Amino acid sequence: MSKPAIALFKKDLRITRVLWAPMAFTYGNFLLMFRENVWVYLATGACLTFVAAATALGIDDRYQADPLFAALPGTRRSLVGGRFLAWGMVTAAGLGLFLIYTALLQAAFGERVPRLTSLVSGKGATAFLAGTLLTGLIFLPFNFRFGLWRGMWLFTAAGFGLSIIALNAIVRLVPPSAYDAGSAASLPGAVGSTGRGLRALAWLIERYMGRPDVIAASAVVLAFLVYLSYRLSVRFYRNRDL
Amino acid sequence: MEYAFEVNALRKEYPGFTLRDVSFALPRGHIMGLIGPNGAGKTTFIKLMLNIVRRTAGDIKIFGLDSLAHEEEIKSRTGFVLDETPFYGYLKVDGVASVIAPFYKSWDGARFNRLCREFELPFRKRVNSLSRGMKMKLALAIALSHGAELVLLDEPTSGLDPVFRRELLERLSGLIQDGRTSVLFSTHITSDLERVADYITCLRDGDLIFSAGRDEVLEKWAVVKGATELLAGETAKLFRSINRGPYGFTALAFDKEEVRRRLAGRGVVIERIRLDDLVFFLGQEGRQEKEAARE
Image (cartoon, rainbow over all chains, first blue to last red; front, side):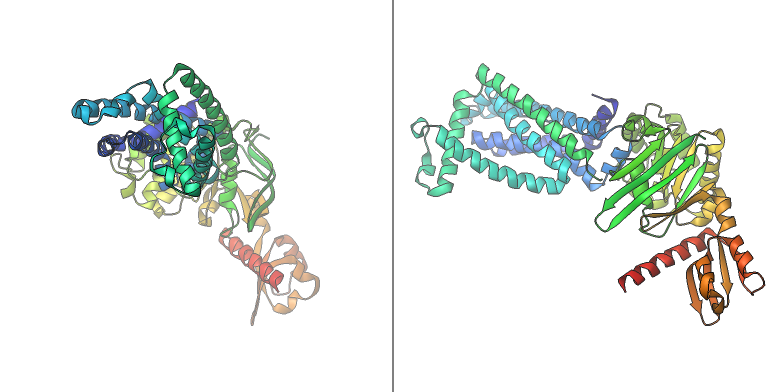
């Protein structure tokens, strides 16, 4: 990492540190609220980590600080590098908090939240990291191409569309007998197949996540995605007028 | 001659505005003023120098180095003040410095503190509670705290009181005394430039009108007043931006000596030009050209 990338990373920490305590508190509260359903719980942790990682971008957008940092020593590449570093660190911190809160909730509520136990494990950490990193790695090129808010809207729209396509593809890959489709079984058309896709995805995660070969494969895929996302982000940001 | 920067056929295209193939240079150890009406391209030019916006075509060499290929080195030797001061409002003055200092290898914290004291900037005050003038002083303190060899200032004197403005101009004059530091600053307060600038560059609607030494500009250009009948035939070609009134005309002459030679003894008044007049007349000429094009 170059000096300007480290400087930008430090800057992100410096400008957000006033929010760390409230964010950690809010994080715990939300997890507490959604402790009953392990999937919603996992998604809540991932979403809040995404929001925490995007906070520095939001502050920079609020103060229109991008031109300032583009004019300071460094290149667009180093600025992108700093952002990726900060995003990775926040994700790691989010994972740490997630595991700590989960362990605390499990200790406090014991058998009333039996399924949370499974999350304090390699399986839980892999699921959490795969979700948060994947989301971040897709979002960042949008951010560098379109700016924060336009990028966020386009990312949300694209993410929604791609998720539906992916879930419908999963339904075709996983045999219906393998998982319990639940209430989604009776739903018609695309809504039904998307619902069944969610069930099938849950089954896949339950069955395969945490296995050493799956962790290794996830790491390879994520490493490739980091490379691809970084290269795209640099290309987009390099050509953008600030 | 060694140049602080040289731009060659620099072009930037936006929808509705183009900075057109601008070429000029600033010799080291001098101050250049960038003038022109609103929308002339002054801010765009400074942003291009800092790579905040991307050029469509052309070259920028700063300290003899290509501004894209040696971006990091050039920026570490360049100080700047942008037209907006995008500092985090909730940080205190020293907090802003702590965010920016890590970007510079040669950041001089003691110098920053000294400048803040000289500029009467309150260290413990949040940026939100500073006036526009104080924010500008903060930006200046940052720009001057790492031994920059080239200082790019976009409207640095706007929002400043006359006393500090004068002090700033003296400081800029002091900066270049080492013979290696150079300053480019854009301003609408052209009297500032008459005081300190060695070179004047004028842009209008994205075109370079001229870039020349201040004395040369003030010697060569003039405001001319006379009877309207004098504008007949070839004489009108001596002028730009002609205002015709019931009692005669007022116009901008770009070659004072030629006017003096051709119209001697015919009742014209040739006045020494001020940069303010120059911007006014050139701005007016631009508007007239646009109106003529529309018609």
